[in-house]
Amino acid sequence: MFTVLLAEDDRNLNKMMSAYLRMNGYQVLSALDGEEALTLLDSHKPDLVICDIMMPRMDGYELTRELRDAFPELPVLIVTAKDTIGDKRSGFVAGADDYMVKPIDLDELGMRITALLRRSRIATDRIIHLGETELHYDSLSVKRGEEKLQLTKKEFLLLFKLLSYPGRIFTRQQLMDEIWGMDAESDERTVDVHIKRLRQKCEGFPEFTLETVRGLGYKAEKKE
Image 1: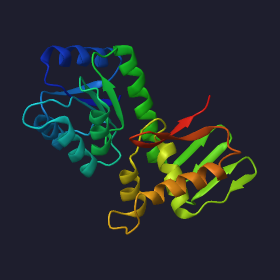
Image 2 (image 1 turned 180 degrees about the vertical axis):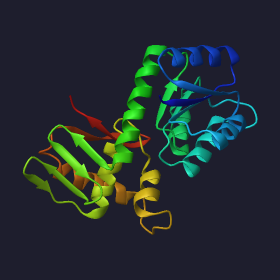
Image 3 (image 1 turned 30 degrees about the vertical axis):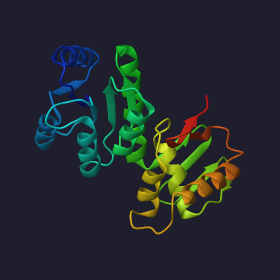
Image 4 (image 1 turned 90 degrees about the vertical axis):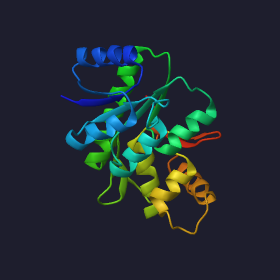
């Protein structure tokens, strides 16, 4: 059974979402603000976190940053009424894996949770299967059938990161910090160059695309 930590200060919405999650087989840890959520994390190990942004004592942005520092692979879904592109950018920069605008559709919420948990398992297993394409983190290898894709280490790490979380938007700075390191002397244009090279090298791999999200960054999308 998966455990979901829900941080939502609207008591009625918290109860409604908690009831829906339990009805669908999840164990729920409920918090009314970010600080309470962090306290629950001291004694529990959830598989996924859902949090609002506008909460007392500690808002969702700060909570997400704290979670990302302490639990880098823990999926975080922001659910909020704040719907501008700037709000979304702030959420993804803080480290959110997905962003959902209120009022929410509970069935859509369920589908997003399922997708996030699936992506989390991929990242943990260190192997990605997409149709005939396989990525093996430990050997830094990519192959499709008998065809092997020749990538540099940085190109592989960038591709593996994006394909581990299909649909998740990563800013250039996030990718720079994680792939090149926070002390790297390269600038964000380095990411653009590597994405361009990856697109050229992956033209014969029909299972996925690498997409630019204007004003935000990059994401990988799986093709059906």
